[in-house]
Every structure is written in C-alpha cells, then in structure tokens.
Image 1 (cartoon, helix red, strand yellow):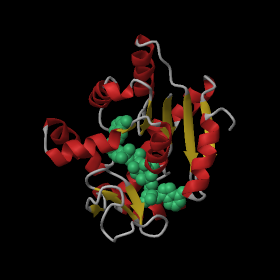
Image 2 (cartoon, helix red, strand yellow):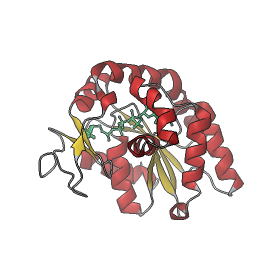
Image 3 (cartoon, rainbow, N blue to C red):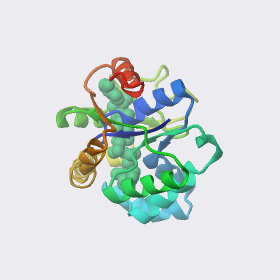
Length: 216
Ligand code: AP5
C-alpha cells in the first residue's frame, strides 16, 4: 500500500505514520526526518538543507525529489510505504506520480489530518523528539515514560530548533502557500480522505485505519 499523509506542521503526521507503519509493516518515510538525520551526520546533504530548515522554508524540489526517489527505491519499500511530509508542492506530487507510474504503481490513499492553528502552536511548543529514531513526544499529550529518554530506543529527546514560535509561524505560512493546493490535487483524483486531528492519538489512529481500509 502506498500512502501519503498531508497536514500542517504539528498536525500529527509523524505520530500517526509511526502507528500505521507498525500496524501495516511498511516503512514510514518522513522527508523532515531524512533531512535532520543528514544534518546530524554533517554530510553534504545536511549542509545543503540546514539553512532552509532553520528558516522554516521548503528545501528546493530538485534536492527533495531526488532524496525521496532514492529512498523509495530501497528494498524495504517493495510492499509499499507511508510518506510523511512529502509531497509538499505540486511539482513534488507530480514527480511522485511519475516515479510510481514507471514502476506500475500508484498512490492508493491520501489522508489529510485537519487541526486548528491554535492547537498546532500548542503542540509544537510542547514537542520533544528522539535524536536517534525521531519518535515525537509531547510534554502533556504523550510524555515519555522516563523524562528525556525515548520509550522505543532509549535515545535522547530534544526540542527541534524550528519549533520556535517565529519559525512555526513561517512554516504554517509556507504550508498554506505551497502545500495546501495538494488537497485539491488529490481530491480531484478521488484519493483524499480528511480526518479530524483534534482528538486523542488512539481515536485518530482508529479512524485512519478505517479510511485506509476504504471504510472511512
Ligand atoms: P517536517 O519534519 O516534515 O515538519 P512538519 O511538516 O512541519 O511537520 P512536523 O514534524 O512539525 O509535525 P507532524 O505533523 O509530524 O506532527 P507530530 O506527529 O510530530 O519538515 C521540517 C522541515 O523540513 C520543513 O520546514 C522544510 O524545511 C523541510 N522539508 C521537509 N519535507 C520537505 C519537502 N517535502 N519539501 C521541502 N522541504 C521539506 O506531532 C506534533 C506534536 O503534537 C508532538 O509533540 C506530538 O506528540 C503531539 N501530538 C500528535 N498527535 C496529537 C494528538 N492527537 N493530540 C495531542 N497531541 C498530539
């Protein structure tokens, strides 16, 4: 199954993608995580993308599309994948369609997680993520069992520099300018299912599972 999760920064894409990935046994591919890992390694990709992430701007399409194309060609994607944070521009969406078409595949379902602006700011202000496996936590909604440590891998938790109020505002602005048009793009081909993201994590996960099985 080839799944895309759409939604504003902080809407819960990473949280829900992690759950679906475990349930369906397909990889969770998050463009933001791939960029942050490259920055942690300090490699060439990391150097090229750092200034964009720091400012809350989109990384240019040619860099992002190449990175995702390479990732989805990996052996673990043979039975599908769940994309979180990609595509984010019409150009990226069209490139994804082309790459899949060459392999005789299509995007099966696009889930749009809807959350209000006030809730996004609250969520991102309280978010911590794991430096090793990128699992997100929230100091109130989903705290780790041991403070400062990841439940899954024991890695160190930290706050993303782009979660500062000023950069969050920029990221939300960029989302509405560049990414929101994808909602219509996928609606027109009948692949979009919208779900209310302002409920408990488990409740959303159940609705998402129904939407993926065609019942939602
Ligand atoms: P990226 O890492 O993709 O960030 P984002 O889209 O801004 O999304 P987030 O990771 O902030 O939020 P999320 O929706 O995953 O929410 P989460 O589950 O963590 O991108 C970062 C940057 O990389 C971009 O700004 C850009 O520079 C670059 N980039 C990435 N992809 C790109 C692309 N395709 N093209 C160009 N540039 C790209 O949840 C948020 C918080 O809320 C957590 O604390 C979580 O615990 C909590 N939470 C989750 N669900 C709930 C709930 N139901 N109730 C209460 N709290 C909840």
